[in-house]
Image: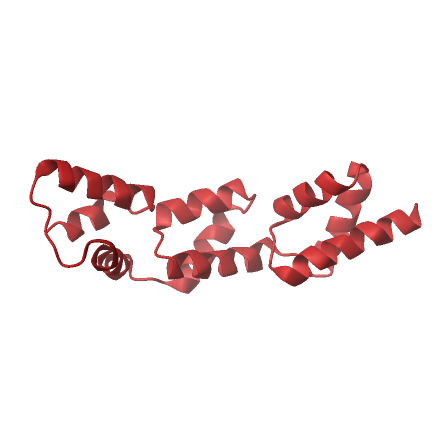
Length: 146
């Protein structure tokens, strides 16, 4: 059984060496590979105590990554919640990143549509849906159409 715990820990370390993972993601990936849920939980708990897996660190990395890919705060929060990160950790990560959402949506608009103005209502609605799918709130979306 000790060999099994060591094997699970090595696989977890291998996954964490590639990129940060949330605790929930790591538990899922290990559960897909191994069939001892109690042992997996024990190993992941120990990794968390050793600060090798951290939801806070994962949230910070994820927020930076998604901002660089021009995603808005609603989408980022939703994605992090799905990955098991607490609202407090999400807020902390977003506060630390402190992005200018209005500048971000403006840059995204120029990247996707250039400096063109939508000529008809149908095109405006299409652009609004795109920005909503990217996770921007109504204030940012209204700002871009002024």
